[in-house]
Amino acid sequence: MDQYIALLCPQAMNYSPQLLHDKLAVALNELASTHKFLIGLSGGLDSVVLLHAMAKLRDQPGTNFQLRALHINHQLQDQAQSWEQYCLSLCARLDVECTSTKVEIAGSSGIENSAREARYHEFEAALLHDEELLLAHHRDDQMETLLLRLIRGSGTRGLSGIPRNRMLGASRLLRPLLDIDREELQSYAESEQLIWVEDHSNKDEGFDRNYCRHSLLPLIEARWPGYRESWSKSAVLASESEVLIQELAAIDLAESVAESESVVSREKLLALSEPRRRNVLRHWLAGLGAKELGWNQLQQLSNEVLLGTSGQFIAEDFQIFCFRERVYVLASQELERDLEKIDLGILPGSPVAREVMLPGNGRLRFGETQGGGICLDKLSNLSVRYRQGGETCRLAGRPSKTLKKILQESEIPPWLRGRIPLLYDGEDLAYIPGLGVSEGLAAQGSESGCIIEWEQPDLTLLA
Image (cartoon, rainbow, N blue to C red; front, side, top):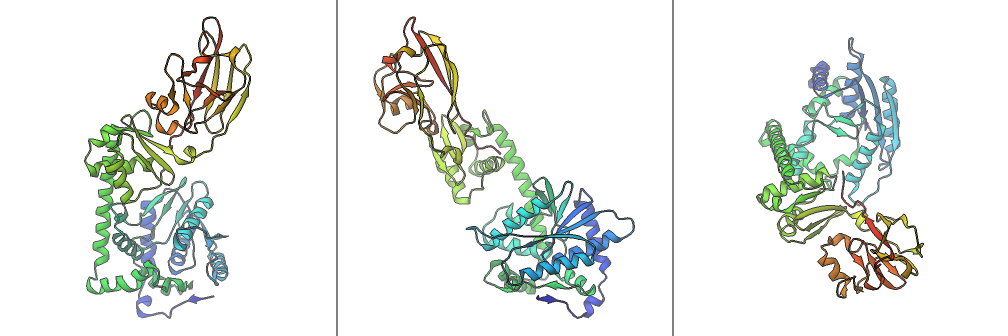
């Protein structure tokens, strides 16, 4: 196992560990809402220092909190198993309960992102009731993040940097070392003669973060030694700006929302300036749990799709439709569900009062009537089908038209035109729920009839 322990240098010999203990205690007092903590322990310098300092705080008179650690074995390095064993033995020496879990890294978003997603999934799953997660990100991590996000063109939210705390599932994630430089963590580790593991992939400058850490930021520090303080101030200002932006978006959304949270007024959106329109769209979609749109996609939605009276926008997990001065966001998974033909057989003469479930497409309700609806005595074999294209029908009291024309004239929303259940008698289109019955099958006078209603499925994207 690759381990590291430095000989005590003068700086480490003059460093008092109590300084870090005091800073950590202050941070916990500001951030924590519990006395139960789970530490994410990689075995590297940062997390080893956090674990050690937390254990020392726990053992001080007058303190009262519970401490556990979790090591995630990503199985990406030859030394991964030895790192796991080191973390378990370190926790045993510090009298800290420790568990370890192995994860399989798979995904198309790159090794770094996939490993991060797997890691946070395990953290969330491991947290107990009323327990908060502690991670050892420090101020140099923050500087790297700010630089990378600036290079990638982030807005105020991205330039706010790594948050000191945030929600993680039903619990919270805290970063109590975020205002402390890595140099101070190393001085603490050396003064306490700690051992930690070195991941040699952290030296590979083929990774953007490592290139920033080892090449770019040292150059910046050589020219501007106080850049950490000024960049930290910029992150605070960006964070405050983001709060104001979100508050404005909430106000605009409240003015724009229509009959449900998944529907907004197109007119109200278009009355806003372009920046405010993009802002409220981003806020609206985020509130519904939609995957965040990139800059170009948001521009397209705001400046092209909304300007069309019947525009459509297709994203990875949702679709947006503009229809009759409303903007709807719908779940792609529901829209793309396959719909199957259902044979209903011959309806009984009377009485008629039942419902038929349509898999993935709501239900049909059948109600008995007289002199209206579809005539039961004229039916042979009723089935439910869906639009294929080219259908025609002559509804009672109307001329023969294509189904496409009937749906358009009836102002059926575009996303429902392929989903509306069509009732066929044999091979003839007999009944369109909510629109009418074919001329030859309409009940007249004293004839027993059946009214068929379609209860639509909920296709909206809901948080």
